[in-house]
Length: 425
Image (cartoon, rainbow, N blue to C red; front, side, top):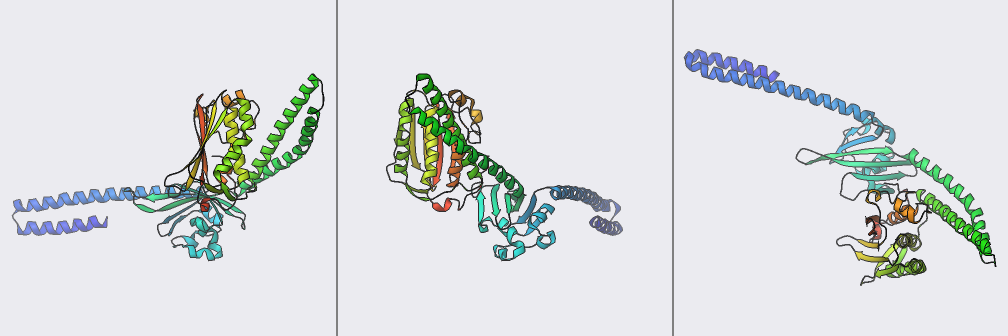
C-alpha cells in the first residue's frame, strides 16, 4: 500500500497547487483526473495484494503436500540449481535440504561421497545400472537406477516445468525407493525357484518312467493310461520349467550370451524345428526373406526360445489349412530390425491385448482351444526381447488372426549392459 499512499499525497499536493493557480472550473478537470487515478491505483493494489495472498496460500498448500509425500521430490532449473528438496528426498539420499537447496550441481560432483547417489540420480548416464522405460527425449522420463554397493533401488519420473507459453523453466523429479519392493520380489522368486527345483526332479523321473512304459508292448487300455500319464507329466514339467525361467528372469540371472547372429539362418532353423507340428496341425509356414543378409547381436538360444514360442502359438491357435507368415524389415531412420509373426488364427480379443504379455494370463478364446497352458510363455518372450533392447506388441482382429511384432536393435550400444527386473506394465 506504500505506493498508493505516496501517489495519494502527490495527488493532493498537485491538486492544491492546481486549485491555487487555476480558476475553480478549470482546476476541477485535473483534480477529477487525479481522483480517478487514485481510485484505479487503490483498486489495482488491493487486487494485487489479494492475488499475492492467494499465491502464498497455494504455495504453502503445495509445500505441505510435497513435504508429506512418501516419494522424494526434487525440482531444479536448467542449470541444475536445486529449488525443491522435500523430507522424503532427504531420507532417500541421506542429505539435509540446506546442503543442496539453491546450489548448482554438476556431474563432476560425483567424486564427492555424500553427493554421489544424488548426482547419479540427476544424471542417470553416470549410474552403472540405469534402465530407461520411456523413449529418449520424451516426457515424462521413467528410469530405474540400481546402486548395488549401497543396496538401493530407485525409480525416477522426470517431467518438465514450463510457463504458460511453453518455455522451459526447469524439471521436477519424483524419486521412489523400491528397495523393499525389489527385495520382496526376490524373496518370492527364491521361494518359487526352490519349490520348482524340488518338483522338477520327481517329475522328470515320472516322465522317464512313462516314456519307458510307452515303448513296451502293452494292451490298448494300458497304453491309454501310459499315454495320459506321459502327457500330464510332460505338461507339468513344462510349467515347472516356465516357473524356473520366470524366477531367473525376475532375479536378473536368466543368463545371456551375446554373439553375432545371422538372422536369416537363425529364423530358418527355428522354422525347421516347428515344421512337424505345423504339418500335424495342417498349417503352412512362410518366410518372407529380406533381400540383403542381416546380422544382429543377441543370445541365439534365448531369442530362439522367444521366436519358437511365437510361432508355436501361431500354429496352435490357428485354423485348419491356415498360414503363418514371418517377415523381417529394417525400420526407416531407426537402428532397429522389425520381425513379425502373422497368423490366420482365432485372434486376440481387443479388450485383453494389453494383458496378453502379463504373467499367467490366457484369453478366454485361447483356453477353449487349448485348456492346458501356464500363461507364462508370452511373458517370458517379452522379457527376452526387452533384454535385447527391443519391444514387442500385438495387432489382432478377432477370428481373423494376429500379428506379433518385435524390434531388435542393430546398434549393440542400445542393448542393456546387464540383466535387471522387468516389471509387468
